[in-house]
Image (cartoon, rainbow, N blue to C red; front, side, top):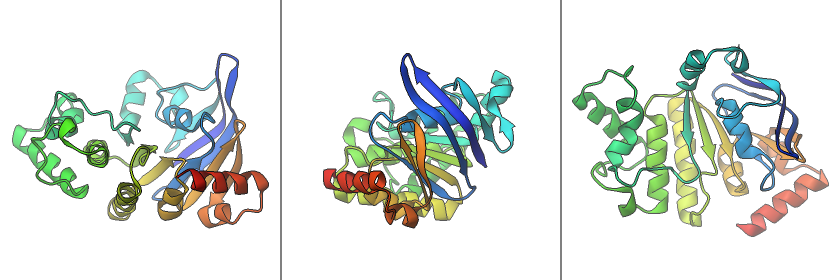
Length: 246
């Protein structure tokens, strides 16, 4: 379980997060929403220890990551898979090489070449991209690149999957395909997923719980259906504007 307690984060005079407290239940899909610049992606980076809050604590399975060594934090990060907004693939590497990177760059994973090839093939099958091992990212569509990025996030069999705007820049058909894939992976693998998104159609389709950040604080946190049916004027207007923009 991931538990955030009273998280504060500033960049200069910009107080992005002002006392955010959230629990992410194991095995569930939780969406984080809010207007651009509200701190959604910052929160993801704080969860995995890429950013440090000025105040508050982040507990991963009962371990406060602010109280542990770099080596211990490294071990905790192994529990996570991260899909970046841009997919963050290396253009000079093939699809297979991109996916295998977390295994080949870490000496602790003592896999043979054949074993790595098998793992890569399994992850590509999970994201419906079997047979693309030898292609370069430039030969793939935006949606396919996102799926390769997701395959790489899955290659270490993480307990937690973090998605940073997974449907940004994709057409509605491809966005729907990514949503279906996220839902299927959650059902198949039973992972805990945290989804940062502005796409309310994605929220409706894949998320069981929603938290909304507004002015650095949590305006809402609860079940998706309650969020979508909220009488709160700020929430109502946010949903309306977001759907109109897509």
